[in-house]
Length: 368
Ligand SMILES: *Cc1c(COP(=O)(O)O)cnc(C)c1O
Picture 1 (cartoon, rainbow, N blue to C red):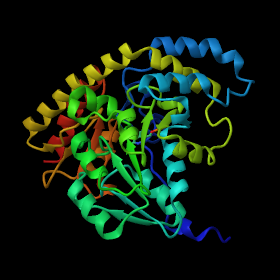
Picture 2: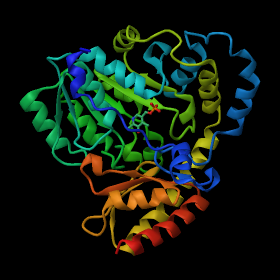
Picture 3: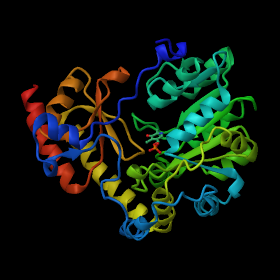
């Protein structure tokens, strides 16, 4: 059958392996599996959210409120913007998709960092647009500037902090770059891990309201999947000026969020204390990974997220290490497919991390 020709260049996104697969393939008991491959919050959902979901479970036959009024209002108040500045998506992934489809066709250009969130490129290729990438693995604004000057772009992605590497640009430098960007170029600031970055270092914090008032061509994206511990609920959002939001709305199907997801997100926003305590624990535990890497003599990237990227240089093959960890029930992300000999590990809970270190000890020993 003949399909849309642009799809010939599209690769399918490979999500972090689910627990179910490891059970099936390696016969490991689910309770012995440690899943640290998708940057979920290891402390689980806030108990207040879980209770709300139980209460609502009898309402599932009714369509959700398509205006999403309450969630938009909560987000508008969190960011001190108007509801007309907010759009909700099935994960921030869906907002990314809207942004790309709002800006790109086969004559367009998209600019991004070399090693960044894979979905930018996938959505781009769906439109047949040209994908431009800077040269370094980590975000490098001088390279962004040079490429922008040379080629221009219809849409630019800045992942702040960056997945899968964990680095984060300073706000000041980002703003200096944005001042040089044309008003017709949409700049997507992907803040999926902003809660972590701004906790660790004030200089990394991007305030959505400040961003969109200074740069009307920018959109800020956030998600409930990471710090807010709702990966299974699929809720994300975009904050931008009204013109951008209205345009993105044209791409949205009705009821794109479920009743339970909406309620979970609203409830999660009421329990900031839970989120902040998870973030604090995250950085305490991350320190253990840094010490571990130093002790074993390999490199890591200073991370502003809830994961850490361990670079093996010529000491080990990341693919081999990831496979052997998997056989022992530890799911991590191998970055070989991104052209980097590294693994990305989500920072787990204290007991998970302790187990990871002892299993990694064995695996590294065998690969010496
Ligand atoms: C996880 C993630 C997202 C979106 O996740 P959703 O679950 O779709 O909200 C977007 N960008 C980056 C960089 C991410 O890591």
